[in-house]
Length: 327
Ligand code: NAI
Image (cartoon, rainbow, N blue to C red; front, side):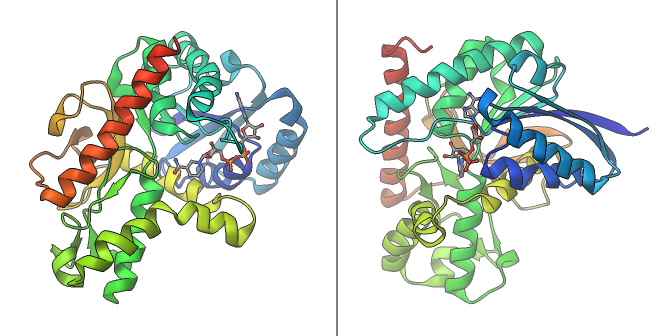
């Protein structure tokens, strides 16, 4: 029997949208045996551009792509959707306070959560890319009233960035780097954990043997990679963000290779002392179709300090959205 998934994509005519839709339609997100229907959401002013993207998708004659819907209405885009990829969001502009950013995105993600509950498939899941992705996801989750296990936000791009940095520093192939966990928030406080990451099965910190580099340059390079790309390209990362989203959803829908973990922001059940319900990035595995947070990883004093800082930031964001009445 052939599987079929309905995938809603918000912000579909944006940069990431343009890079991701062709990869979903070609089967890279759900695998070669799963047909896809794309339900694309945009703001009214971007519907013209979205129509052009649809024409290009048609022109690819993808064998797995069975339908494309373009709309500016959430209830149409989310109708019976199995996955909602929330890419559209309002970016931070110069002079904008974090509270303003949360407020404006709360205006998108509150209604999005409600529309998900009302219109999407009973098994639907939300994967948030649009920033601030952890807290946007939290707002949608709270607004939806749905089971918290259906909500995710993306630190996959940070994980991939960190893997490549470690591989290049160690002079090994990127496939040698495993268990690269990003802890916490997809923000400048994220902690790319080089102590628990492995190179060729050994601690990355031991293999590289230069803790000064790891604690300083490595972490800052990963945290500031987005800004470096904007500086070089004149536009924010799009193809790599789309790639990360493809890989992130693939990781959630396929069993994880033996010994490997992947980073995913999801609602804490209290693992590692993280407040229940916070959307926090943890090391994860899927086994026999079941997603779990990998427990038992240890942090030294440096790691615990980084962990606490990113946890504290997420608590503050949650408290701000509560104070603003967004949840
Ligand atoms: P973009 O500005 O090119 O595209 C965003 C699109 O969303 C636009 O076409 C806009 O019309 C649409 N949009 C805005 N509000 C919407 C709404 N309420 N409903 C439907 N569509 C809406 O931006 P880009 O480069 O595609 O990035 C999208 C988001 O992804 C940004 O928030 C960015 O910060 C975030 N991002 C997240 C990453 C992560 O690792 N989590 C990595 C890279 C980007």
